[in-house]
Length: 289
Ligand SMILES: [Zn+2]
Ligand SMILES: [Zn+2]
Image (cartoon, rainbow, N blue to C red; front, side, top):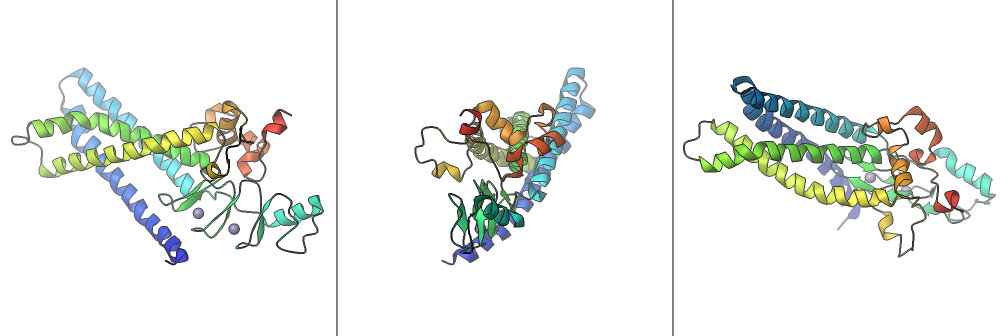
């Protein structure tokens, strides 16, 4: 099998995934808002029931905006590439005498494909065909690598998508049960019923697979490890980048609490936190010598 072709194929698959995401969003929107809760809000005689419908519609739109916002920021943010000057600076600092491309970089790695030094936690992505800073994984859903500069946005996308799909399942469940109970004498149009069943099944499939992913990334985040590094830890008693749960969280989400749930960083954090740029990362020995 030609690995290069396979990897380029993954890139094409990504565009199909974007269409799939758009399709799932459209079907869910139709099932939850257009055919179920908006009519209830308009037509229901009960005040409390109308208020509940309005609340569901508002929360649905809020989560939808947050997940699309996080998604677009993740897609369009460069995860971080090795800067041009990095190699020269490194050579000067270490007096590394690196006329030979292959050597003189101390404990740092070297990428023969890109012909550059790899900063700590940097890895080569065979789909993007370049080195990516603090690479976590190549994500086909976003047609981009997840790395130092977009990991937070990716986690927020995961978080809001998980909440939205959970909401969809909970608010579609009564209609879904009713559909099976009154399969013969239901009054809804066939189009509405099709979108209800499709949205319910798709959201259920998504929520189950997202749950595994969410749990995995919570565990990675709490130990300041990337998906790539899981295989590198090799039974180390305590991972060298593990600064404790709170600091590990701040290394990705920044220190300003108001920005934690937004796909943005404060200027203060960008100016003061080296980890957000992906070239230098504090280790345990820095804070606890
Ligand atoms: Zn590379
Ligand atoms: Zn990649």
